[in-house]
Length: 124
Image 1 (cartoon, rainbow, N blue to C red):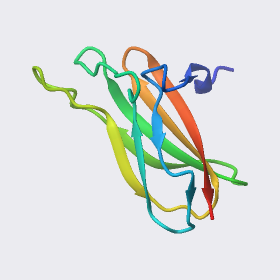
Image 2: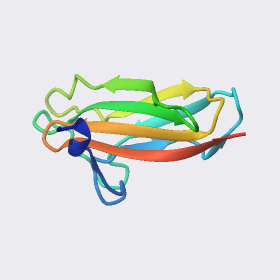
Image 3: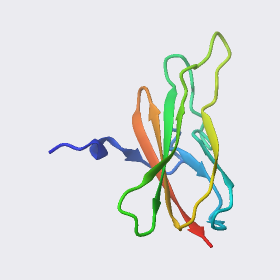
Image 4: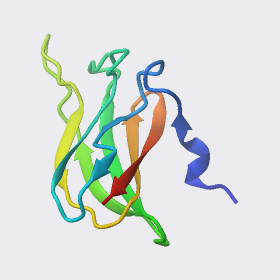
């Protein structure tokens, strides 16, 4: 049986411009709001042209002991620029967590496919 997981690519965002970078604290307080930001190209810029662009980010959280992850955010970039003006794909939201777990982010490049990364987060 084929699964979608076979298409997920990963790498170190410092050396691969398609890997989503999760900007979140390593520790947060239970029930307290914190800013969660996702971007690509932090170390090596992604071109973001009409021909080559990041189309979306998806962000999930898998709490310790939970069976499945939950979706936290979905950022869609449908406007890629006009003329010499281009957008940079960055998604930002506010999040509250009650348990420690793992944040997962995916990004989709129209030429190079789906990329993923993760970050552990401790809830005190």
